[in-house]
Image 1 (spheres, one colour):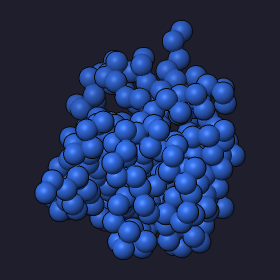
Image 2: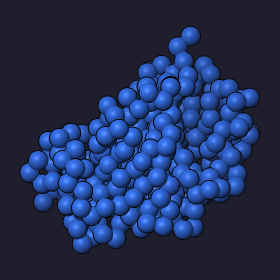
Image 3: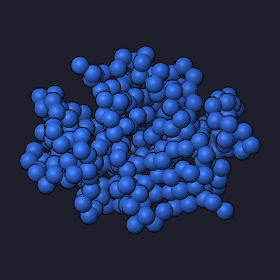
Length: 137
Length: 137
């Protein structure tokens, strides 16, 4: 059963982890799990605390040349009547200075309190929310 | 800390759910959660039990024109020292008749026992295993 946009967005927002898909110049998709925070229809995520290495991360190179991204939250259970997922498709851009985004991330994840992220922030403007849950007849 | 290929593959195989990324003709990635089974370096997944609808699924249209896919398994915990993920990048193809793949899926998921998947099977030949876990110093 398809979820409506509002419900897909609500479920997405409730999650602690999502997966970010980007695409490279050869059309090869790339996937990583991410922590994220949301404000309105913008999803923000940070890279880790190793600035020298993170500056060259594949996800950042991909977004720099192709801003189309997809992000997924899903719930798995061996009881398949409990399955659901929510997806955000959109356009991403990178910023090196985003104190608002870092504040959102720190507010959601106490783990960031002592070591807030310092690398680039990926902002995704969501253009489509979609989702699904098991159809209970 | 990077995982070696064997460890990434082992962790991937241990999971009940993965996420499949495909790419459409505009370079837009598409993400869905999947159940899967593995044999050697091949990952198989089925679409659901609604053949008429599933024949036109976005993931199938994408693979038919661009076989490059990425599949991700991840473990999230609020204790970030427990984080890890494992990824399979590869090339996918579709088959309508794949009794071996259906048998693998039914062996892994008892949920399929009474209603084995009937839709197309996606076979992914994995060309690269990668993974990461939190570095414990």
